[in-house]
Length: 411
Image 1 (cartoon, rainbow, N blue to C red):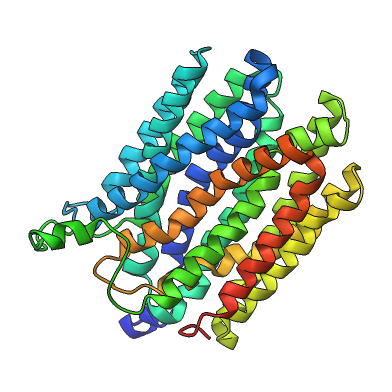
Image 2 (cartoon, helix red, strand yellow):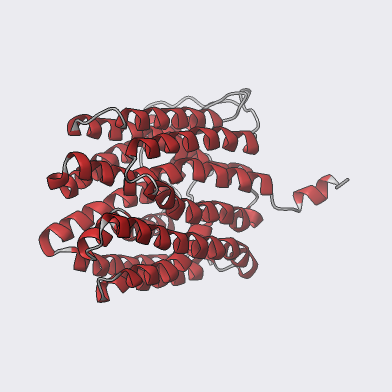
């Protein structure tokens, strides 16, 4: 039987496993629907307007996510229940997301689809913000890199696996979305069961009055803010660069590389498999290495620039092999980024008391980046064609790396 001291000296792996399941619960369905099934649906019901509609979907999602991320962060910070602060919101968000996916399968109206997507983004962020805060709530500082690597591994797996799963349903779109509903619900409930957040219903909640109420819902204005905002904008650029490619990957294969639907589906599966395994491997090793050498910032810079090199590969040749090369180089570097991203987030927080709200704001970089990427891609494609989206993504990655290098608080 291990002593209490021995238990405390070990990383809380159960929390890490729960976080990984939680990431899979929302990110795998999101990527599957957003990057593959929704574009396939639009190809079917509105082929002439598909690029513009994807940009509209992204814009609506960005606006809703920007508000919902902060609101649910504040609400979870102030929630008191026998299941803790974060668990109730993860459950509510998982159920709400599943309902929105089901509604997508029964509508052919583009305006209604946009409304449903906006509601979905709100439900999605009820999961994302509170889930991120668990890393701050329950994990000691010396193990944050190691436990964050679980988050990174799941992130590296969920992105390509969402595409792999969804690409199997390009001719059975509704069946694919129903599959995503099942994943969202099963893994969402499993996540909170594994984490088993302690209850806090007896904790006091300080009432908010006047400026305190306003401050609770706005970007932080007190504490060490420089590093916080450098991290925020660095992350925004890296994630947006990633989703410039992910958001249009189906169309890159079909319209830029001139593949048939069947060839595109096959190439998507190959690319996504490479992304999954390279990302998973480097995410698994990067967190513990960062803890050991104490150099989160340097690894973030290397990951950012390396990922930029990966996304630039298809610029040179409109052939599938360049997307596979992107998957090898970019997948490895994005795995490093995913592994230590959340450890960096926790390290630059201005206030522990507002952890979920401030993490929610930092997570806006992920949420808005996922949406901003397709918007940038749409503008570039419309004005200049597919060719230059890869150069745009490269430039964003380099600037992101420079911003990470400017952070002072984190080694």
